[in-house]
Image 1 (cartoon, rainbow, N blue to C red):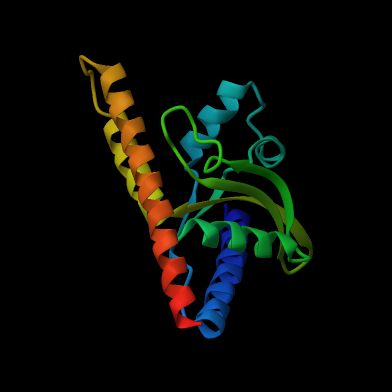
Image 2 (cartoon, helix red, strand yellow; image 1 turned 120 degrees about the vertical axis):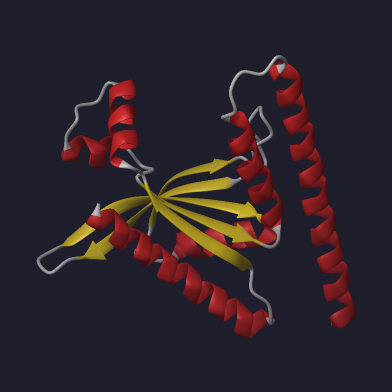
Length: 193
């Protein structure tokens, strides 16, 4: 787990540097917050069992890409794509997979941009590539996902289809708000030029 914590620190440092650079160049910070997590051992074991993989360290490293997770909450949708693009161009990062749930939302309405990357960590005796999942969301997407996660795990309900439809509708509304907020920012930026 220490290796995954180190990989998270590497990613977090890169993101903080980019946020600081944006602050100087554009006089604003695109990143509202960065949250990190390491998947719990029981969750790792359950996922390996569910997928039929052996319960070994090697199996974890080869078969699971979401042990180390970083959530980047941005102000605007275009910040998400710009930060992901800049991060992907850094010469010590390899992008292994991209899942764009902003352009292609999940059926429940979930929106986010997911990158699975490989980043080296430097240990006393070697350099080791580690996988990290990075989720980019806007503030509104993060708000929806957090509440949806809380509501989804409630006990028995009489009308799960109605609730799923309402959550999906809320996700659409939130996306509309994200788009409008970006339009407002762009209108303000034109006035400042």
